[in-house]
Amino acid sequence: MRQYSENEILQELSAGNKNAFEFLYDTYQLRLYHFAFHYLNDEELSKDIVQDVFSIVWEDHKKFEGVSNVSSWLFTLTKNQCLKKIDHLKVKQKYADILKYRQLNIVQDALTELDTSPVTFDEINTIVNQTLSILSPQSRQIFEMSRFENLKNREIAEKLSISQKSVEAHITKALKYFKEALKNYLPFVAFLFLE
Image 1: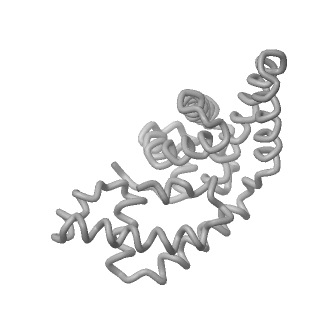
Image 2: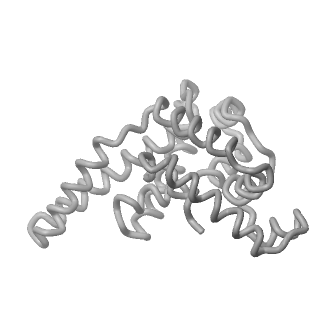
């Protein structure tokens, strides 16, 4: 599948390019799922949220010509869909389960306060790039292949002619750096830490 830059993805998407949409989906669907799951703690609801977000993106793609940061835009859409779902759940839970209703209020408050602005995502990108720069060249390559190209450890080992255990060791080492550097942004970057 063709890789797109930030500007290309926005231009192609606003023109209705299905390949650009598929690239966007493949790149972000897992990240958005984990973000939604962090707040909703429900697999099916989180999957529904992601489907809703990508339905909005495809159906209203012409409205997004002015978007400047893809990550900020998608996480904001996901945040808003989560808030709508929480409002719906609160109505159902208000009388049925008061404890669940209170928990939904807490989650809703936390999500409402969450900053999904482009500035936040610029900060995340800066931290990711700084952290990548301190990794050894091989650790960096392996981490990027794993997390950004979505290759399995076995595939990475085959491509680099190293053992799968070596790949796992490099990823574990890199994750320690990233967990510390990005600890204040975990809802957005949880996908980096999945092993």
